[in-house]
Length: 97
Image (cartoon, rainbow, N blue to C red; front, side, top):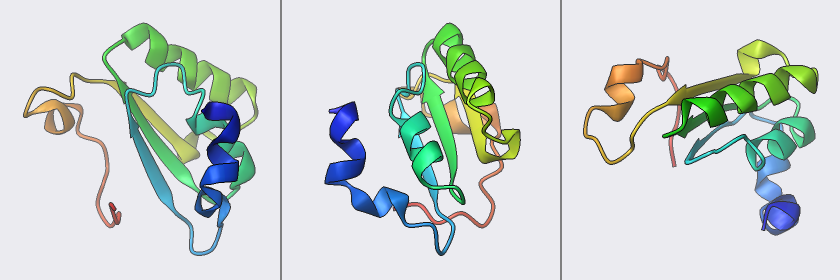
């Protein structure tokens, strides 16, 4: 599915207005990285249960030359009610759909 993500959901490449995307269970970022590359104004947040996978996502984004202000990643258990609150991401002003 990752190969076809941008083909199936072309809205992910719309750069105006800038968009923010979140993926729960992002793993090493294999879905978020193509979005970051295709949409130069978007920002993303990726969460995963695995600290190792999130670190791999962050390293891959940095290695791809993506500015660090465009991506956030943190380990969290999405089955826990306080998963987002515990990580304290800056979500102010974001529109989530």
